[in-house]
Structure formats: structure tokens, C-alpha cells
Length: 373
Image (cartoon, rainbow, N blue to C red; front, side):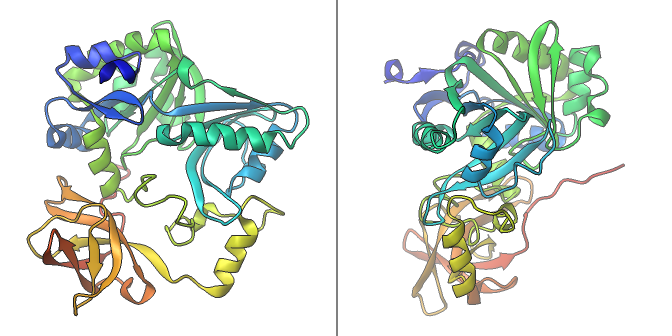
């Protein structure tokens, strides 16, 4: 089976560390090393290092690159300064989500798009179609040549400084959702102050040949500070606690950014973008459902796809993600419900394999890191 899967440049490192490897989005990826809870807690208290080289990287260049990319997304790329990363959705004409992306504004004629691994082929075709409407704009798929690591946790910048003294200024100089080009022990890297865990930290782009040296340097510097390698399992529990959407769960081509709680990424003041007219209509007619966070009040764990029920046992929605929360010590979940069930404190039930278990809508994110001293 593994012969048919893609491998990241760090595959042998993961195997040497005893990682449990699983198929994910066409890649052989580590789901855990010492254990999901151990890795989750390391990220919350010290730091974790993730291999996310399976993600897709699409490069758009040309004098109208910003114009083309801005038309493709719901957020405002034109208004972003150089060196800025923006989170956004890319919608189809129906206003539903093709993918959620981060765009990096390298220059007015140079944009890097990072998409989900499971959507790479779809998004490569979609971006090609869009940029083809703008003269002089080209698309290059750099996914197979690019490695991506995520160093996440409260000690991330301390670890970077220990790994290379030239990075000691990053904690103060690199602002959230900004990126910079640097070197780490001679390896050329791009650091972005972004992540998918709810913690501070960076995502690090580099060439494939630099992936192992960069990983090794960070582990060497960080292990004495509590750094642990972390897999996809902890990545999922961390992002759930932070209420960060996962494509295929909270968002897909049946959901709009408005009902998914991503309306803040939709800039209606833009003259036009793909899906705008459909989203305007949705706002005018009103939403029929919305995504909520809930905690289980009974004994049970909600999982993706489980029905959400009213007090009479009638289905009213469905769970999109659910898990025991290592940080909070309780079971939590996300799901779509009608608006009348969305108010904080509202109670409903989740059908956990035929067992009706109580749940209550709560404020999200479930976990929010402390800032400042």
C-alpha cells in the first residue's frame, strides 16, 4: 500500500522516531509518535514540531497576479501589504467553499497559495482556470518541490533562537500573519507566523533538501525545552479546541463561509469575486443553519457525521468534528444546527451510535491561549 503513496522528505525521520504512519491525502504521514495526548499537551505547554509537507503550494506570478488571486478569493488581497499572509476561502459561483487557503503576498507580481492536500488537484485546476482569464499571469505547482514544517507552542520562538542566533529577533520582529525569508544554519527558509493549533509559532517553508537539516536543528535545540514531534492526531485535537475548520468536516462544497462562521473572511465591499452574488443573496434571504461548538453533558463522544437531535429525538443537524479535549478534560464537538438552536446554553442531543447523549452549545473557541506576561 505504501508504494502507491507519496512520501514527504521527512518520511525516514518519522519512521526512525517510531511514528505510526497512515495514508492521508495521498501521502504516508505520521499520525502519532509517543501518543496523541502527549503530543497535544507538549504543544500547549512547550512546543510541537509537525511535518505538513503534504500541503499544496501554488505560485501565481505576473503583473496581474494580485488582481487574479483577489478575484478568486473572498478576502481582500489587494489591500494587504507586502509580506502579509491572509486566510481566506475560495468559493464557486454558488458561494460554497472549494477550499480554505492562506495566500502569501510576496510581491505585487508574486503570490504563493497554500491549499489543503486533499484539494490540490482540484485547486490547481481551479486556479489555472481563473488566472487564465488574466493576461500575463502564470501558475506553477511547487508542491512537490516544497517542504513545510510547523513549529507550534509557547516556546517556539525560544527554540528558533537556540537553533540559530540570527533568529533571536523573530518573536518581536515577526508579527502574526507576516512572513520573512531567513537562513537556519545555512539552510534557506521562509518563516510565517501562522499555524493550525491555537498556539503561537511559525510555519517554515524550505526546499526538500533542507527539510531534514531544518527538522534536526529544531529538534536538537528544542528537545531540552520540551519540544516533541507531533503527528496528525494531535494536529486535529489542537485545531478542534481552537475551533479551526477542517476541510471535509466543517467546510466543503455544501457549505458557505457565512454559515461556517467564516463571514469575517468575506469582504463584500470588493467590486467582485467568485461567489459574491450568491453570498449576497444568502445574506438577503437569511441563513437557515450555522456552525456551533458544543460540549457533551452526558457520557459519550460526538464524531463526524453523528446526527444532532432535538428533545423529541428528531434530527436537526449533524456533527462535523468531535473528540475528547485533552486540555479541557471534556468531550467537545462542532456541528451544524438551525439558528434557533445556536444560542449559547441551548441543549440538544447527539446520536452516538444509537445512544442519545446530551450536549450544550458553548462559546468558542473552546481554548484560547493566554497572551502577554
